[in-house]
Image (cartoon, rainbow, N blue to C red; front, side, top):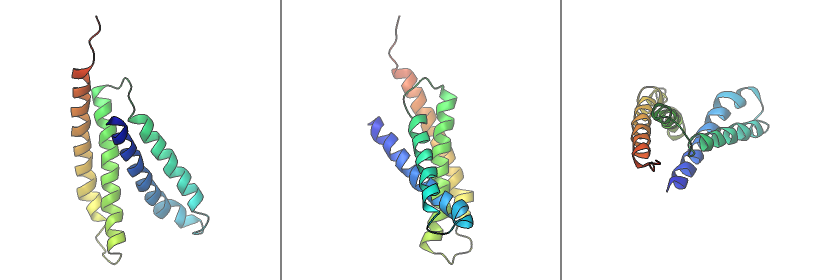
Length: 129
């Protein structure tokens, strides 16, 4: 189950990082054909970092909650920012959805989910005496 959650999070971060780095960074400075290689590298590094950060390890409660808040908040921001651009490119206020609604709500939802997970993991940890 946890492997599935980590895989989904890494895949979503890959897509979000790909879209963000392509449209906001590399497509502005490079030609359309040459922008794909650095964009893929950036997205792969972001996905690997997400895979590493969400792995099992000795993380504190606050660190786990903050990590998941950053991941889900970033995904919410990218979905709300780029979604309206893709669906209706003519809408002039579409990206505001990501800035003011889906980004902050994703941050709060990720923080609460990370906190619940960290507390559950601490409660379920085997006791060694």
